[in-house]
Length: 268
Image (cartoon, helix red, strand yellow):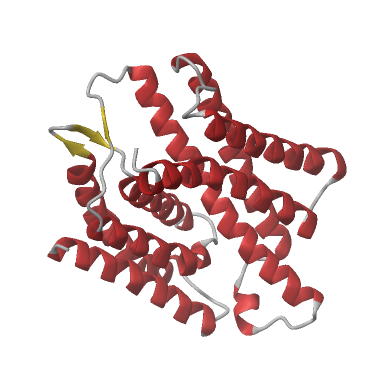
């Protein structure tokens, strides 16, 4: 553990704590300046985390895409997407979950000595596929957090217990609109990821890739059905949340599930 990593973790946790405090002590009027102050420690943490990632991913032995390095990179991307979006949209409350998650991802990366080096002769097409896949996972991870928050909000409103922190969230319809916007964007990036894989990889159904490919396609189908149901039948509420969570779980198993088994259990 380095001083920089400890500081980055502390900044992430401070942002999460500030956002939680803001939510529990909700005030009707919250200015853009107030929001920026709440997010500032997280933005500083992002900058330090980026420096750590750069030195962790790029090494003389090649690109290090070990399990915990990628876990940390995904955490960083999720935090980056959240914080930049929160400056424009009322989604800063997602940081209560995202900031501790990202700090945990960074902590595990710093404590791990597991590596998985890729050849330095990767084609640009394969590099694009890897990067777009990580971006797709990150975008849909934010959608998953949004779906969880939406589920809690929906449950409280149905039980007629709209507590103070529930009132602090945007209206249910606004939350649903933002959820489907995130899922739509994530779905487009996931589609690009799958397409690039079939174009640039020799065999997406090779033995070491078949489980990842099949689970990714299942996730793509689940998100397709969700978006089609929203467009055709106006799916919303718990129906939409269940489909969103199912798609995310399939995607999580496709990437981190298979990577965990191959690298940490089978040690290949």
